[in-house]
Image (cartoon, rainbow, N blue to C red; front, side, top):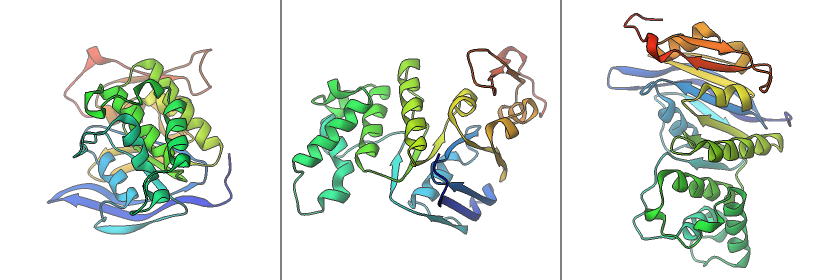
Length: 257
């Protein structure tokens, strides 16, 4: 992992909607080549933080500093025009193409290579609007890869994917991080963080958070509090030393963890 410069730095980030705080005094530094998993319940500020990191939302307090080009994979995209999957990926080349130039051969080669990398080349000529949710996420991932970004932000990229495609994307993200790209990804699966991430940010709501390595911060107590039901950490020979996390869905209680 490359750690020569800071890929992404947050200083005192705070944000709220009306009187509802979602982020408070959030400061952290991610070296180049980090893979940070962002976990938390619905509505605690994961998407808000990613928007702040991408520059599409100004925080009420604090600042974000980064080195290099940003790429963003949102949960959903609804293009105004009917586009094929290949055309959607070509939009990721807009920074290289410019406003007044049509895509060239190199742009098509980069877009097709990105689709191939996410095993979605068979979708090339399909209408983006006709694709399933998981297929759309593969295309949006390819679009982000085509930007040649240095920092990649992803908002629940695997939410609509089957397990094969989840593994495909997670392994790809781990490889990208190992080659120097900085990754920040929100997810509802603690296993994604335990198996692939170098850093984890837990958002508990009302601005409370904790940040560190997965094995440091993803304790049973922290995860139980995060998801408001019992969570157990389980070791398995097939998994790295962090093991996995198992929710006990049948033991949902109204009490606070």
